[in-house]
Image (cartoon, rainbow, N blue to C red):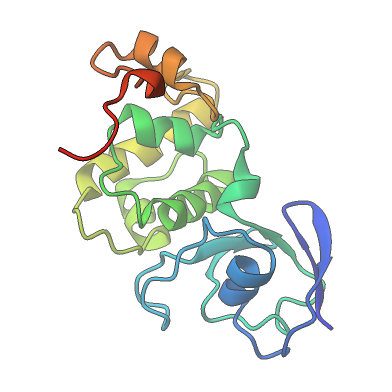
Length: 188
């Protein structure tokens, strides 16, 4: 049974050793932030960090991941405070969000090894496909994340997880929590 450390927790998977890491993470560990996109390594939606390198989890078996340290989007930052997460929000580089976890993981690995990446370095290190076409904003976001990582800039863009509907309504006046007691009963 393959053993590895996922998000700083030792895990042992009672699965076929040839199971792709993607499915072990999603189905057995319930870490569903790692997305299935194409299944053959082209899109990058399933990107995770393995021993410091961004790798496509659909192409790695759990046998190949044995003894390694894996970080998924859930383990990157529980409060969305990672510089890449903050910069992605601040630069509005998120559209539908499906590809976002993979992009964030690829960018986080890049910023860790090169906190001042050039546009060419970003394009090489973050090969992820985005159907919404956020690429120009993505480059700006990753460069901004580098400035944050180098402590040249500070961002407070993303709200903490678990915000209540009432708090969200105070933050965004266009939102109003629904009072379930005042909803009409029955059909129209």
